[in-house]
Image (cartoon, rainbow, N blue to C red; front, side, top):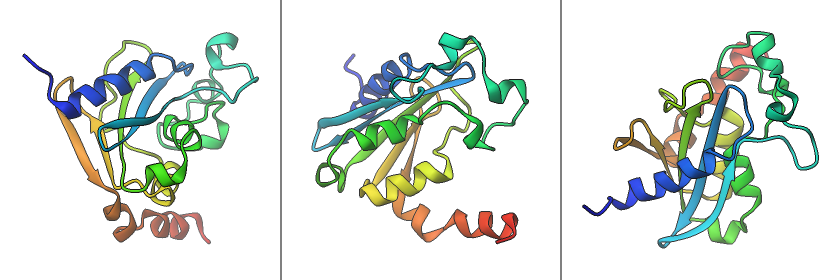
Length: 163
Protein backbone atom coordinates (compact mmCIF):
# COMPACT_ATOMS: atom_id res chain seq x y z
CA UNK A 1 0.00 0.00 0.00
CA UNK A 2 1.28 3.43 -0.92
CA UNK A 3 2.34 5.62 2.02
CA UNK A 4 0.25 8.76 2.57
CA UNK A 5 2.27 11.83 1.53
CA UNK A 6 2.55 13.55 4.93
CA UNK A 7 3.81 10.33 6.53
CA UNK A 8 6.23 9.90 3.63
CA UNK A 9 7.72 13.32 4.47
CA UNK A 10 7.70 12.48 8.18
CA UNK A 11 9.55 9.25 7.39
CA UNK A 12 12.25 11.32 5.69
CA UNK A 13 12.40 13.65 8.71
CA UNK A 14 12.74 10.57 10.93
CA UNK A 15 15.66 9.40 8.79
CA UNK A 16 17.27 12.83 9.30
CA UNK A 17 16.84 12.41 13.07
CA UNK A 18 19.01 9.30 12.90
CA UNK A 19 21.97 11.62 12.14
CA UNK A 20 21.46 13.49 15.43
CA UNK A 21 24.22 13.51 18.03
CA UNK A 22 22.24 14.22 21.20
CA UNK A 23 22.33 11.66 24.04
CA UNK A 24 18.78 12.60 25.15
CA UNK A 25 16.57 13.21 22.12
CA UNK A 26 17.25 13.54 18.43
CA UNK A 27 15.02 15.52 16.15
CA UNK A 28 14.97 15.57 12.40
CA UNK A 29 13.02 17.80 10.10
CA UNK A 30 12.57 18.71 6.49
CA UNK A 31 11.13 21.79 4.86
CA UNK A 32 8.88 21.11 1.88
CA UNK A 33 7.30 23.46 -0.64
CA UNK A 34 5.29 22.45 -3.71
CA UNK A 35 6.18 18.78 -3.10
CA UNK A 36 9.90 19.57 -3.20
CA UNK A 37 12.25 19.14 -0.25
CA UNK A 38 13.93 22.51 0.30
CA UNK A 39 16.24 21.49 3.16
CA UNK A 40 16.80 19.03 5.98
CA UNK A 41 18.07 19.38 9.51
CA UNK A 42 18.90 17.32 12.56
CA UNK A 43 19.99 18.10 16.11
CA UNK A 44 23.75 18.28 16.59
CA UNK A 45 26.68 20.36 17.76
CA UNK A 46 27.76 23.32 15.61
CA UNK A 47 30.15 22.46 12.78
CA UNK A 48 33.65 21.82 14.05
CA UNK A 49 32.66 21.40 17.69
CA UNK A 50 32.61 18.05 19.48
CA UNK A 51 29.15 16.63 19.95
CA UNK A 52 27.71 14.71 22.88
CA UNK A 53 28.08 11.30 21.21
CA UNK A 54 31.80 12.02 20.66
CA UNK A 55 32.19 13.18 24.26
CA UNK A 56 29.92 10.41 25.59
CA UNK A 57 28.52 13.04 27.92
CA UNK A 58 25.43 15.24 28.10
CA UNK A 59 25.75 18.35 30.25
CA UNK A 60 21.96 18.81 30.50
CA UNK A 61 21.54 15.18 31.56
CA UNK A 62 24.24 15.52 34.23
CA UNK A 63 22.39 18.54 35.66
CA UNK A 64 19.04 16.72 35.35
CA UNK A 65 17.56 19.65 33.45
CA UNK A 66 13.93 18.88 32.53
CA UNK A 67 12.85 18.77 28.91
CA UNK A 68 11.94 22.17 27.52
CA UNK A 69 14.12 24.20 29.89
CA UNK A 70 17.52 25.91 29.79
CA UNK A 71 18.44 25.16 26.17
CA UNK A 72 21.43 27.46 26.54
CA UNK A 73 23.05 24.55 28.44
CA UNK A 74 22.80 22.30 25.35
CA UNK A 75 25.60 21.70 22.81
CA UNK A 76 23.16 21.04 19.97
CA UNK A 77 21.70 23.26 17.31
CA UNK A 78 18.05 22.23 16.91
CA UNK A 79 16.90 20.45 13.75
CA UNK A 80 14.56 23.31 12.82
CA UNK A 81 17.41 25.82 13.14
CA UNK A 82 19.69 23.69 10.97
CA UNK A 83 17.04 23.29 8.28
CA UNK A 84 16.17 26.99 8.26
CA UNK A 85 19.77 28.20 7.98
CA UNK A 86 20.27 25.82 5.05
CA UNK A 87 17.42 27.22 2.95
CA UNK A 88 16.80 30.54 1.23
CA UNK A 89 13.92 32.44 2.83
CA UNK A 90 12.20 32.92 -0.53
CA UNK A 91 11.86 29.14 -0.76
CA UNK A 92 10.47 28.81 2.78
CA UNK A 93 7.65 31.32 2.43
CA UNK A 94 4.44 29.27 2.40
CA UNK A 95 6.33 26.00 3.01
CA UNK A 96 5.68 23.21 5.52
CA UNK A 97 8.09 21.81 8.08
CA UNK A 98 7.89 18.11 9.00
CA UNK A 99 9.45 17.10 12.33
CA UNK A 100 10.08 13.86 14.23
CA UNK A 101 11.70 13.46 17.65
CA UNK A 102 13.24 10.19 18.83
CA UNK A 103 14.34 9.31 22.35
CA UNK A 104 18.00 8.27 22.35
CA UNK A 105 17.64 5.60 25.06
CA UNK A 106 15.02 3.43 23.37
CA UNK A 107 14.39 4.91 19.91
CA UNK A 108 10.74 5.68 20.72
CA UNK A 109 8.98 8.71 19.26
CA UNK A 110 9.06 11.70 21.62
CA UNK A 111 5.64 12.23 23.19
CA UNK A 112 4.06 15.65 22.69
CA UNK A 113 7.01 16.88 20.66
CA UNK A 114 6.97 20.52 19.68
CA UNK A 115 9.35 23.27 18.67
CA UNK A 116 10.93 25.29 21.47
CA UNK A 117 10.07 28.99 21.75
CA UNK A 118 13.25 30.02 19.93
CA UNK A 119 12.60 27.64 17.03
CA UNK A 120 9.00 28.86 16.86
CA UNK A 121 10.32 32.39 16.34
CA UNK A 122 12.64 31.23 13.58
CA UNK A 123 9.84 29.27 11.89
CA UNK A 124 7.57 32.33 12.02
CA UNK A 125 10.22 34.61 10.53
CA UNK A 126 11.16 32.07 7.86
CA UNK A 127 7.61 32.32 6.51
CA UNK A 128 6.78 28.65 7.05
CA UNK A 129 2.99 28.14 7.19
CA UNK A 130 2.47 24.67 8.69
CA UNK A 131 4.35 22.30 10.97
CA UNK A 132 3.65 18.56 10.93
CA UNK A 133 4.79 16.68 14.04
CA UNK A 134 4.82 12.90 14.29
CA UNK A 135 3.03 11.37 17.32
CA UNK A 136 3.12 7.71 16.23
CA UNK A 137 4.35 5.89 13.13
CA UNK A 138 1.09 6.84 11.37
CA UNK A 139 -0.38 9.71 13.41
CA UNK A 140 0.72 13.33 13.40
CA UNK A 141 -0.44 16.80 14.35
CA UNK A 142 -0.69 19.74 11.97
CA UNK A 143 0.07 23.12 13.49
CA UNK A 144 -0.77 26.33 11.71
CA UNK A 145 2.12 28.73 12.35
CA UNK A 146 -0.40 31.57 12.47
CA UNK A 147 -1.63 30.01 15.76
CA UNK A 148 1.84 30.62 17.25
CA UNK A 149 1.51 34.26 16.21
CA UNK A 150 -2.04 34.65 17.53
CA UNK A 151 -1.26 32.83 20.81
CA UNK A 152 2.10 34.45 21.56
CA UNK A 153 3.68 32.21 24.22
CA UNK A 154 6.61 34.63 24.60
CA UNK A 155 4.30 37.03 26.43
CA UNK A 156 3.71 34.38 29.09
CA UNK A 157 7.43 33.53 29.20
CA UNK A 158 8.36 37.20 29.60
CA UNK A 159 5.88 37.66 32.46
CA UNK A 160 7.17 34.51 34.19
CA UNK A 161 10.76 35.60 33.67
CA UNK A 162 10.04 38.87 35.42
CA UNK A 163 10.74 41.19 32.48
